[in-house]
Image (cartoon, rainbow, N blue to C red):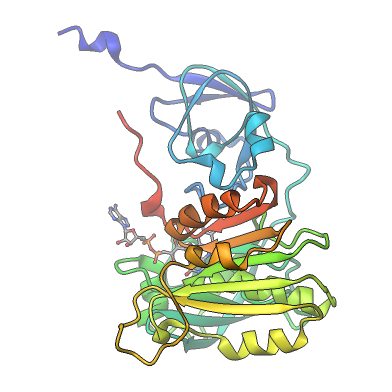
Length: 344
Ligand SMILES: Cc1cc2nc3c(=O)[nH]c(=O)nc-3n(C[C@H](O)[C@H](O)[C@H](O)COP(=O)(O)OP(=O)(O)OC[C@H]3O[C@@H](n4cnc5c(N)ncnc54)[C@H](O)[C@@H]3O)c2cc1C
């Protein structure tokens, strides 16, 4: 009885002076998209920070922890993720449209589909025209055979003049896009690469680098490191690569070539979390974050990329060992499923 009295009403979000009606349980991004108001966005699951905006007035409920992708300074200034924020009443939002990368859609064709491990496939694409991006960024990709399905994948190489790009796609069981890449022949298939997107690239400086990749998270790391090596960057670099077993390690020849080309000190440590005890593996075992205390250098800048759980483990360890929040950059490879449903 009288339950209608507690029913939530729509609220109003003022986004760069444009008014948007937000339905109960709706995120700011969903409401803005429905009403055609510009907020740059990409992953929609709180993994990339493309939709970051400033909450000037009002309150929001955050669906996932924004501190993984926003710096302390941004959080202090009131930045939120539009895709993870449900207004709790009327709100006023500022979106900086000037700092966003120039994003465009370029068509192309799959020219390579190579199984690297039991669940990671390298997809090579010939784009119809070169796309400019920063090594480390990602794009939203759609395949002709999967109309209406678009997923984010990081470029695995720096931008090349021949307009070829590559992606490492890990098979997510039951996943629409990654299952198609894993199970079907997509050679020759047309696709659209929509990008570049994201805030993940090598910041300038001379501080040592610690780079932590899990699974297909190696893609942006390799792109970023190759680009830096080509530019003769001399910073000390430590690359930690977390995988389950020896069979899940890949691109080792590329990493070896990188270590030869790198102008400064280069350390590479693969860390296996599920390698059988009785195997011939003599390298590091356990979680990749377990290795941080032994390897971290003073004043390091940290780059993390891969499954959200790996990033969640590594972040506090890095902070505990003196890495400042503003020196940590992370790309969480969240799936749609990682985004929590709105609580009633
Ligand atoms: C910034 C960013 C960069 C990324 N870069 C990469 C990359 O370089 N390489 C890479 O491999 N991945 C990357 N990802 C992840 C990638 O975008 C996809 O999310 C991933 O490949 C899964 O897509 P899918 O279509 O196969 O799975 P989806 O169809 O999206 O499904 C994902 C999972 O959710 C489950 N699921 C789906 N719907 C439901 C439901 N209603 N209820 C319960 N379960 C459900 C599925 O069974 C599956 O397990 C990145 C993600 C982000 C955010």
